[in-house]
Length: 127
Image (cartoon, rainbow, N blue to C red; front, side, top):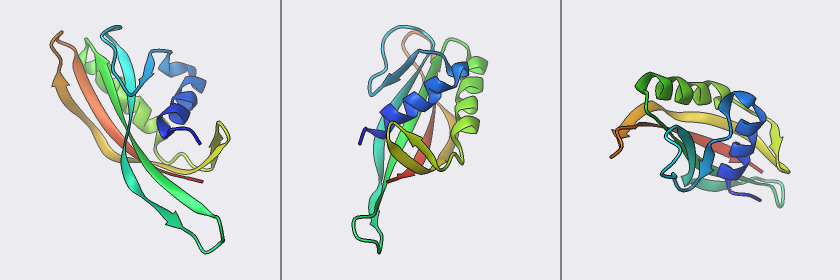
């Protein structure tokens, strides 16, 4: 099973509106405008009554960086709209039974190069 960030990146890339400047785990210095996905602490796995059936519940955070405040907001909001309530989708061989926005997009900060950064977090359930 992949980190959730890798699978969700694949899902975003399959929708051409998000482009190719999507990174995992470390935000690069360039380009100015990019999306970075971080694996964050989720909830403990659920053990179901069926032997061997486990629902893993990771969490991911998106950070969108852009020179333009309004473009950064539009992009992170588009991610929220695209992913929220995504369910019953298989990505790279893993069944995602739920992807849910856990935190509305918010301004994180302005970096040292005067680029704004917005974040939002998603809770996930997968088997």
